[in-house]
Length: 159
Image (cartoon, rainbow, N blue to C red; front, side, top):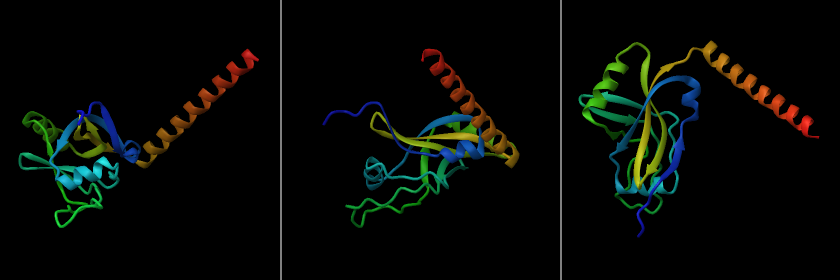
C-alpha cells in the first residue's frame, strides 16, 4: 500500500474561533486505538464540546466525539473517552504557564491526518465577551459588504 502524504481534514471547530480569542496554536499527536483510527478515516468526528487539560505532566483531550466503528466488535472504543495528546515536555510546560493565566483554556481547533498520522491542532484561547463577539461579527459583515461593493464597481467598469 502506498504511503499517505499531505494533510486530510477530518473535523474543524469553527465555533471556537467565534467564541474565543486564539492566542497560540500547537500541533499534537493523539494516542488512539485501532477502531478510533478507522472511524476517523471514514471522516467521522466532532470537536464541538472538546477541550484539553493538563494533568500532571500529560495533556488530555476531553469530550471529543469519535463515533464507534460500525464494523468493530467487542474491541470497539467509547465515543467520548479522554485521549492522551502527544507533545514535547517543553511544549507542555509552555501550555501550563499560559493556561494558569486568568481566563485561558486549551481548545481543539481541528482534527486531521498528516502523513498518515492523526493530529489535533489545539489553541491557547481566552473567552470573548458578548460585545466582542458582536463587534467581530459586525467587522466581518462590513468587510463582506466592502468586497461586494468593490466587485460591483469592477463589473461596471468592464461593462
